Length: 182
Length: 415
Image 1 (cartoon, each protein chain N blue to C red):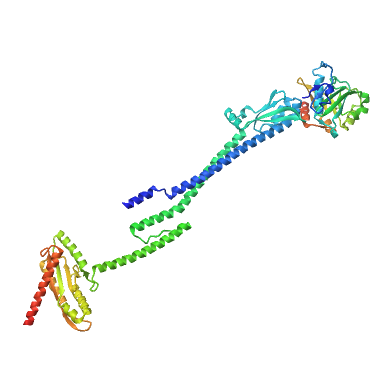
Image 2: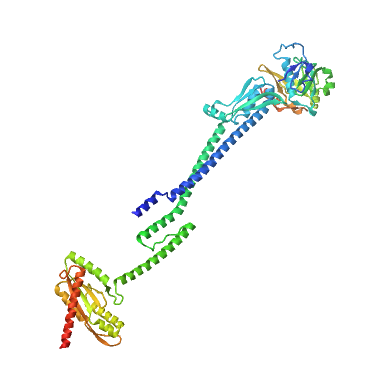
């Protein structure tokens, strides 16, 4: 699928398919059922099958709110396919200022009151949104992480995808849609 | 003997029908068979190529369909996608081979739809499994390998070969019918021609004709043949009349129209043989004109001929219908008497003839002359048993009569 390399060789191998991680000699595995590695893998997979306008391939991944499995994503540079993804944490208070600079949002548990306004604004931008915890996946991000049958997968919010300015490979929708019906 | 030989030869030769059947049937069936075999083999090879291409296409579209699922390693979706695509595409099984050489059988046909092992092994000879890369943006995710099930191909081959056989048989049948029809058109008139020829030859019936044919060449042959028969018939008629003429002249005397010596001797000889067999009697009379040479010398040959004609008529008038009179020499006549009841009958007839013959006649010059004949007779078997002996005996008797008459005349004149 995608491979984990040291971040220093990332640029050299950016043409190849792979994932580069900056990580310490060993990365911690969460005490949850699934690991940050799996989360990073999944999110990069979704990014892999998503297209931004103007073929933008240097992406800012912004992590918002309280997340459990975003360790490998924050303050890290990752690569998948032709994409180079820079992950960072964005404070909830600054979110509206950062909207235009982020192409990917990973939402944790948020304490914002005006999430509705946030989503409305997000949909007018070419942004890929992924929720960490949203089992219903009807309101909010376009994709929602979903752990099922001992395997980490995702659900899709077709409404959000329909309104989004980014294009997602239909095969990915097929994968997420099945879980919606489960 | 020679006729039998010819017939035997003819029956040994192949008939027109068998020749025609053999050659046309062989040629056409061979060509149809060759075309059939060539077309069938071309078709089969094309079919196999198409099947291979089709499977490649199926593999490609399947690999595109499952690329995301393969990327996310979602085997459930892979199975689901393949289960949508592969049934009906005549695929036996689908195998995913990952870059690390691990394999995953993503799909296989339902047990009931599988072909028997023998058929599968047969098909595997001709149909190789095909592979398609499952990749996304040049990243090789896995290889999808598909095996033919071959059921549709086998069915197609089966129906194809059935159709081939049926059309071959139909062709053969049609050829057979056409050949038979042609044969009838062709050989029936020829057979008729042959039978007419044979009948003309055996029966000498030149009125026979060959009937019309539907084939131009044979019909023109018929016209010529019938014309030839016309000519032969005419020729035959001419020949017969000439023969009759010749026959008549061979047997008759041109001047008097009586039988000639040749015919008389022939008939007399037959009469002797018949009489010998049946034990009855015959008699001949020998007649000779008296002083005929004098008449010839005095009045000329034309008058001589006139006298001969009158003599013959007079003799003819005196004899019975069953008797035969012939002119055997210049003024010599012979009469053959059949069916004699007794000895006196010969004398009576002799007398009757003498009375009829002797008497005056008017010449064409209105001159009247006296003509008379001397008559001698001989009897079978009393006076001789052979033709020569009897003729001689009758001639001698006639000579005796002539001498007697001369003496009598001399005596009369002397008186």
